[in-house]
Amino acid sequence: MVKIMHRLQIFASQNPLCVVFIVLAVISWAITIAAMLSSKRTGKHVSGLPALGGFLVFIGFLTSSRKWLALLGFLDPMFLYFVIKIIPDIIAAERYEKNYIPPSEFDGGTLIAYTGYGKEYEELRYPSEYPGSYEVHRINRYCIIQKDTSYFLLKIEHTDRIISRSEYKTPEECKRHASDKAKWKAYE
Image 1 (cartoon, one colour):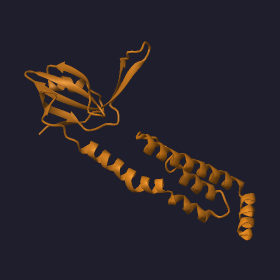
Image 2 (image 1 turned 120 degrees about the horizontal axis):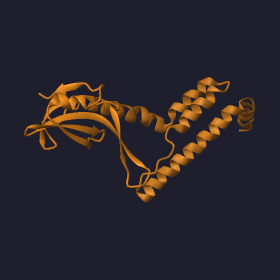
Image 3 (image 1 turned 180 degrees about the vertical axis):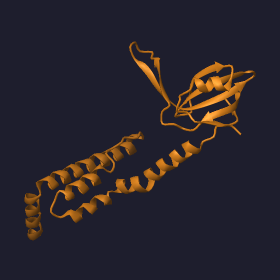
Image 4 (image 1 turned 30 degrees about the horizontal axis):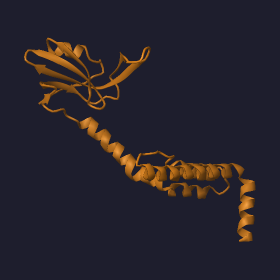
């Protein structure tokens, strides 16, 4: 036991930056565990610092003379959860967004044309209930619907909430009032 402690002291004296990163990793793990216990106790989600501890261990050992120990950073359970669960969920959500087709009856009208999902076609600002502040909405999709003889351009946010509804005489006029970057698809 004395021999192991002596070797750890030598390692710490030769690699002080690594020790700082390891201490920060232990602190982040403690915060994450405390957050998980608090979430369980209160029933409300409290976020910790997931995967930060493993990342700090990885960086810490990369600064040391024993770089192969950086692989220990990948043993952080939150890092493994991130790689196995979170990244595939993000990819599946993006794939769903890109392949989404709105229903034929949309907002009380018949869908004529729609655009694919765009990260942001335009940004709309509306005055907020608080003086001097604004609500900002990022438009991610456009739809053109027909009600009776009128056509409506719908500007839709990421959550499929309609932000703006404008009435025009023709679908081409609707398209002119949308973003130039919009690529339209006819509804079949």
